[in-house]
Image (tube, rainbow, N blue to C red; front, side, top):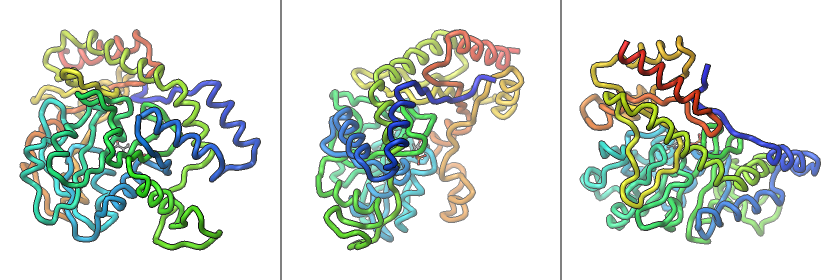
Length: 365
Ligand SMILES: Cc1ncc(COP(=O)(O)O)c(C=O)c1O
């Protein structure tokens, strides 16, 4: 079976992780600031705080921009559920707006129409690694938290790396991501006071200069272990290679799927925008039975996943907020037809061709 995702680990990862294990310092050691500094430098952001997951990063970033109980945060319904859940952690409300049919990112016009006097922040998601229209959101004059969990390596049209524009942006390092720390995340930001707050809140609310077990604010245990930081440092050293391999695989898919014109492929980069390749998601033709397609692909040795379901139509969100079909037609149409194909740096060209020929036989019989 060709898996849908797979991490790419090497000897350097083993070496750095072993060093940590032998040091006996497994949390809050020197690897943490090393990883943060190296990541901030890579993105071109002044500061970075490592956390235990992308979700934890989003949560602390939302708190850091002042999101509070009863507030509204305008965000995309076409995302992994964590982006909306993080808003709920603060008893604020995720207010969804529809997406752009080409980039699949939050549509700035729809987002503007969803802003009310209770809106305290915007939470655009760089979905599937394609840069959201952050400059358009900046023109709203509201605080922004960027969900960059899928977007390591993405670049805006003006050449700024996703995550380098000063707003807090959360990245994620689950094993299917461009780079992994097992579980883990990173918030990058411009404001040093925000870093201090996030560093404290990830560690139960302890300020850096405070005594052991003294805490001056509410906090969480969102720390990232030294083992994970070591893994992250090793992955970061060869991030260019990891990203280039994914871009190459995307090119192979484009070629192999070119004749299947009934499929909608991920959009090409517009102008100087650059996708940070995370997944290869195709939209099936409207009349097609997606579940049957996934099952037939499985029989042919190809794993695939429905990706992504619309958040507002998940049972929890329906029950809690009364969401129904028809609210966000573009999102719902895309969400109903999308499948993620096997996509990882070490997949071979022959395997990509195998996926394409399996898909051809499923679609065309
Ligand atoms: C768009 C998006 N947001 C948030 C997350 C949450 O990251 P994590 O799984 O590290 O908590 C993910 C990761 O899967 C994601 O894809």
